[in-house]
Image 1 (spheres, rainbow, N blue to C red):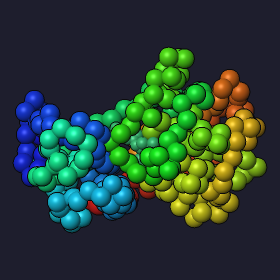
Image 2 (tube, protein in one colour):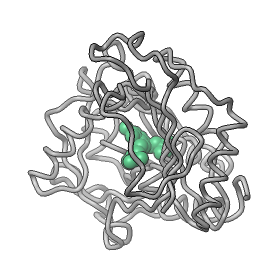
Image 3 (tube, protein in one colour):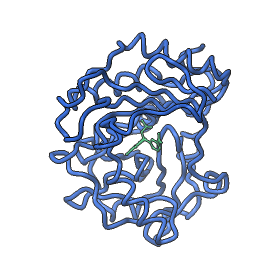
Length: 289
Ligand code: PXG
């Protein structure tokens, strides 16, 4: 496996960055996760745009422009001769002296592109649906660390994930600090109620997921009323269907939340229909290389 670091390729065992990189020392950086389906890079432009938005928000200059970053990504895929992949793109503040002031990083940002595989959940969970549980760790508030930035500081999500795992669950439901449903640790959440689709708006403290946007786009195209609307756990408990979305997770049905069955307790019809449409889209849309 060859990994891109600042314009050069390294074997996995040689792909290393400085221990003084502020990405490591302080989580000072941003990242993206992108999927490739049969040589089609799904929603590449959207992911690159979001990476630049996250970087802009933390005042980080990415030393490549968008076109150059796309070229570097395609070059990495070609070096590894991959048809299907998960692209992990990371941009850190770079190497610097100790101390969290970004001015200590005098060189340029570190750019890393990994092309590998990712598996979040088992096949059984995709087929039968998963159970999730609300955890005590709330999602970061937007005035502290806005969840709309895909930054390298993921301890908020990792803390929630650990709580879920300790309780014997694969994924955690995170509320925001007002107690409204926000998202899961690495996926957005949707519910279906009376044939209509709901997902919390970004302002509730969620990442504007590219998969979330794709599902909204598919739903609208298919005339399914879709709302970005705040909801509580009660609306979730009494929903007809629930599912999670993410680049890594794709679309996964949720059949139980905090011990309450959702709808029939089986993956819902609309969830399955949207999953099918999503699959079709990944087969025909994307940047070919
Ligand atoms: N919310 C959070 C907090 C995420 O981190 C999503 C939602 C889904 O967004 P997309 O744009 O992918 O539909 C994410 C996705 C990884 C990794 O290791 C990244 C995520 C999730 C799990 C693993 O690259 N981010």
